[in-house]
Length: 197
Image (cartoon, rainbow, N blue to C red; front, side, top):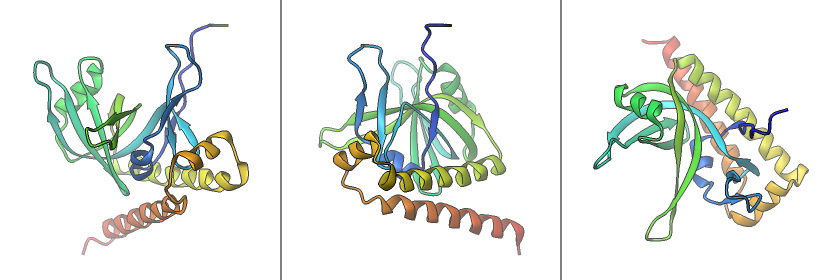
């Protein structure tokens, strides 16, 4: 059996909840221990998986390329940042022309502004061009996973739910509303596509 650490499962979350996940923690003092972002619905996240529309990209690097991408799902916006240490993702951002459907697997990153706000972003491991069907399936599956976390939040009383309850002041119902919004948005898009008149 290998001693190599296995990769964490990439968790699904909508942009609104992900952007609220400003609390990070480690579960050991080991220097190489994974850093987790805590979702307000009570799930720890070391890697995230999401899909949406790349609406804009910009090279914000000074000496080297450093790309910022803005990717929108039905609830809000994910910001991804890729540079020399994420060459494949950076190349994808360089070459893609918005708007484009993409799926992203990456690591959550937090950054505290001078004003004391915490911005949450993603350092992408991979960015893949997808079609509308893949994006739509992601919305439906993410809605289901979010509802599962909300349901478990009250009944399960896991240590992460307790931690989220302590760290965040967001009502858990916010995320149930986001699920409804995302599914209604998807339904409206599908109806519009079916009836182009």
